[in-house]
Image (cartoon, rainbow, N blue to C red):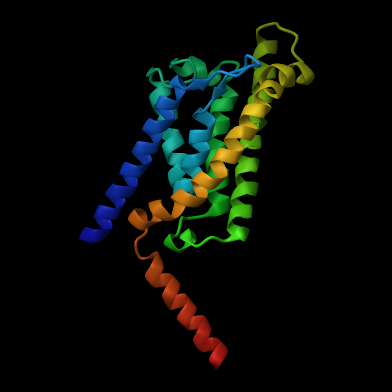
Length: 215
């Protein structure tokens, strides 16, 4: 029971740490020659889901959203408040949550034995990460159009794409290629602290399969 409580505290700590990293991400923007800076906050959200798993990763993003909703300046451009969540770009913040949940559910709970290089696992991470980056735009673009029309501005799907999606695709591709190895390398490290019994369970499973084959 004591060990179980310690693991719960440790997992909560990891969630809080990732939430803090996401919050700090609002201050990081890498300038580019094209003039559209590369923001890293969406990458940190996707990393949280990929490294910690769906529920815990989404929990980190949810904590970040709560902190922003109560007014802390943790959203893009160091802004905060509910106005950011329901404003024109608020849909993208909700997309962060969905993206973290999606990649985490696809990849599942991290395991210590993932440290062994496995091309299929890397491919799975690549597909899950690509899907996560796309998912950010799923609520983002429609909500942007809705809010702009509510404000009396004539914004169609094509305009929304050209303003809030297409300029950011090159940056997202760069972040995608950074995300894949980071998730692959950091998942087993996180699992070592969060799920230390993985190795024992894996050995038991392999022994069970071996015995079944022999019979």
